[in-house]
Length: 237
Image (tube, rainbow, N blue to C red; front, top):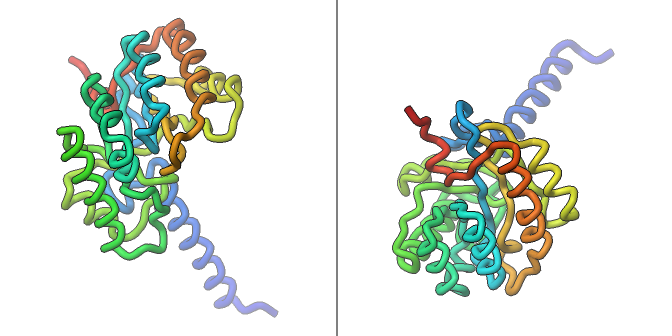
């Protein structure tokens, strides 16, 4: 027979594993540091966010956003900023918000706190020195947080940002991505897309570009407007 103590131990292990899983990847988790995944729900505003840039394809995205008079939030990787400094500056000069997405885009789980801090600090320095903008927002690669992140965020004065809607634009079709964006949009939603593919050179983001072109007019027809993440966090009086 299985003892009551063994059952209790097994239940406790499962509960601990469930808690850790939520802490690491749960969009509403703030276990490893202050974090948000949506903004003010009292008004029809959305925040478009783009991870993994800048890339050689980012200027095409900037043209779309300019045509639609939209300011977005770009979570940049330090390696990509060093590879495409002029494009990083173009993003900031266009009035978009710039956030930190680590230096080399690693999963942070199972890394030591010093590694996590250095990844974020190096990206912070690179972004600031290249664009003149000091990020105040941070998004963990793959949405994975870990021990040591809270200290790193505190030292660098960063607020963690997850998402309300994940676009899956690295492997879904244009129709599926745009439909997901439109159907799941709610007041204060933070939408996560990508203007790069981790730290790869010359990534193909045509699917992302086309999905944005399709979704933005449909979202505007539903009465939504677009803000940066920092703007969407602040309710208006």
